[in-house]
Length: 420
Image: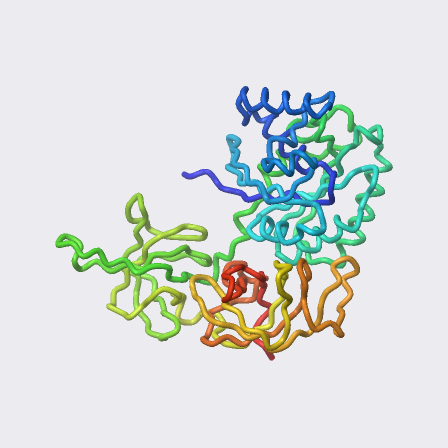
């Protein structure tokens, strides 16, 4: 059986040690080569540090290395005997909130780092809120730099209590806490002797054991069609398949299905993959589905169950994070919208409020969104979308807005439901 793939995102304020934690994890699990280690040892010496700066493993941009900060999302791949991981190291600076949104949008687990000396700061709250808004199912608060507070249990408990108090206002499904020293390796991969008062697992142990399979929606079948496969060869002249990624539910040959927007019904006769036919397909598998009937299906259509289909509509309420400083989101402006595999145009019909991420206050007087701001808007699309609420399905509940003049992605949205 294939190893389970888990997506991680590290978040938190500037200088809380996100890149160092990842570097330590890669180093302690023997995921980096000797020449990489020698290169960062050399770079650390040049910077005048008396230790090996493991943060340099993920900070790949020259500007990041020069300034000692993370700017863009850096992805790293590593594996343990239990699981494979894709790790997004996201920036802590407030002006890179959009990069953090990108990195956390697909994460199964978010590691939120806190500097034990500074405690919970504005950016900690901001990132924890965004992780909860993006419905990251598991949040692990790593209280880092414990070596600088003499591994104080009281300081750790103080931070945990303060964060728990803040988290009651968020929608967090699963919250864990670990005291760590990323620089010295305490409780990152191996459990530390210097925190005898902490009896829980190390960060890596948590990452290997958190149960993520149930986070995906296995009930509502959702299969957005990405491509129609019609090989025009003699041996495959009768083949017609619909390729795409399963984003909800389980598909099996023999299942009754319905195609949107036509509403026609059919039956699955086969499911093919690159490695041959399979007996069932579940998220996030990419497959080709063959149907009994010769229906008119094209890219952007949705295959689902006859009595369990998504909302179909042109009016939606959504939370939007604005990603550009070139323009503002305002009512009356039109954008291209990409939702699953479907493109349409969307008009911003109304803006209900802008959210102050730090206080969670709703500013109903505001009628625009600027870079990194988040607000609730109502959109009207030129053709129907097949969507679920974002909390029910992160794939069919999300979309991006694109500026048609520049082709730049300007907004990322999470659907709250049909407009009332």
